[in-house]
Length: 553
Image (cartoon, rainbow, N blue to C red; front, side, top):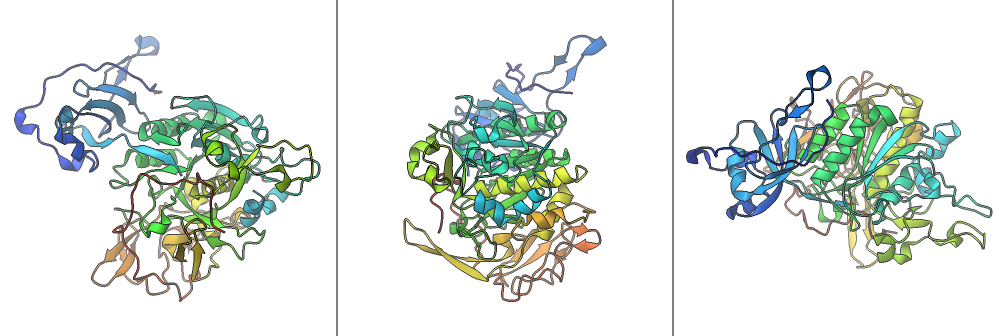
């Protein structure tokens, strides 16, 4: 039954016995616990339940629909979700303890803050090969959950649905979502004028876009808005053929994915047959275990960023040093899954947006793509980050679905990973142009995942995943400084990082494992004694999601 997001008054109820009013810390997120010291504090939370929190009766011949309100002990419910068994609301800190002791309550977490994290780009992933075969994403719906989408000519007629989950203007006043949408599905109309020598064309230039706005003018959102948008995408799946969700946003990880509400929402979308593509994050310079949520979801396709080096060929492309690395904090899930171009990407501009005002030097001048003296300006903008790499993969997924609409999310993920390019150097070094500091990246599976996506290769692969394509986890031994892969049932002790590690039985595809003896990482790969498993991770509030555009050379 469709459940409207609702705001409602809450019925009062007698408090539980005093003896039960002790916090069940296993049910309360670690970032919420410190706020409980002052019982009079008001806190915004998401409460997950073991079963649906709201029951409704009636409808049709049974009379009007009557719903039993969710009880938050006198607090206010903001939203009742249907995609997961949860509600968001505001209540007193003192009541969180009482609520945690209710038998149907599974977990309580803060309603946390999230932030926003094509010429060379398309060539780097072999998209032109797909276009020449007629695959352009036509008919496939991609939900861009971001800061909104400006009505740019390069998307004209293909933004089929708009809804905002935050206050502000109807369109994109931050400038991030428009840029992301252009990478996914811009058709290059504005740049393909007389005298043009470069065209800024997205990966799936005829795909339809759903604009689900969750980021405000400063690029900030919260869990409630993002979960609501994911839920809306699932509800609109049949109407608009929504097969892909793009999440170029994220926040730090505070608990296991199975307890993180936004991670759970991603899982629900995946189970509904929608491929969810998520940015890894831009904290790679802080070391390993820097992937953000919901990029830690094992089912999602988590994307790191490559640099095209300003050339059409793939052979010289390198990893961006800021691209977040796995394994994920707490769960130790192997991420990212794949990498794609994300550095110095030219895409659509939202005029008068926050980003355009902050970084005027990132506006692409008409002289950079056309010889025409009358070409209008303020059409394209340059940004860097895994936020930009993510829509490259979302566009690739749309091309695969256009070719074969029966593909499941697991098969799509498996094919992209299996066919991804695996020819990398052992290491590379990048220098930050503003600070002069150098960063060395090692091309292990926590940095590049299964490799550099190759759309042409993915479209010519016909393997079918016979089981889940969930990313495996790892087990780390502090005494030996070695890690082993875990497929969920057994530990693969035969693959220490110091050897030619492969992914054992991660995914069986038509009788062949994605990671097998034929997948050569190279014996020189340093799996590394320098892997700092979360100890040096800076989970600061200054997470940059591709907003400055000042990428690496």
